[in-house]
Length: 142
Image 1 (cartoon, rainbow, N blue to C red):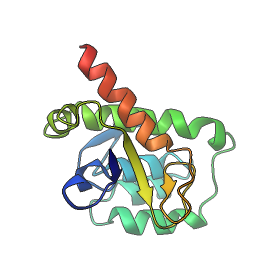
Image 2: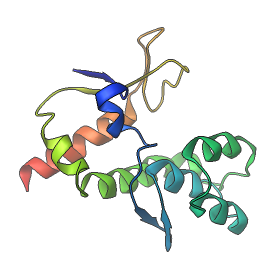
Image 3: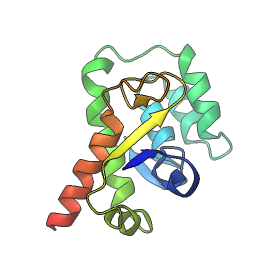
């Protein structure tokens, strides 16, 4: 089992550098692309696509943006698109396939029970881990 995206598994993180194309823009990580989709504000999208801004800066800044109206119904679809793009690129594709059939959990210590599993309570839906495992399954079938 992959319990968290730390150490030699940091490449699984949405913060890992990778080129993602979304809504006609290029982003430097899945986090950058995902966060950009949360708002229709053109200046926000430009901020997210600016190579000078780190994934952490963008994540923190996203707390203050106006979300698109249907974000709660759209967010899984957006993340899936970003994850598919990431893991269809090297070296991510090979690394993911090398995980075999291991369960992938986005364990975290900040209480995210939607995308991951809170390591303090061992509770969470692990949507990010599940999406990554779905992509791995698709890659194995190809």
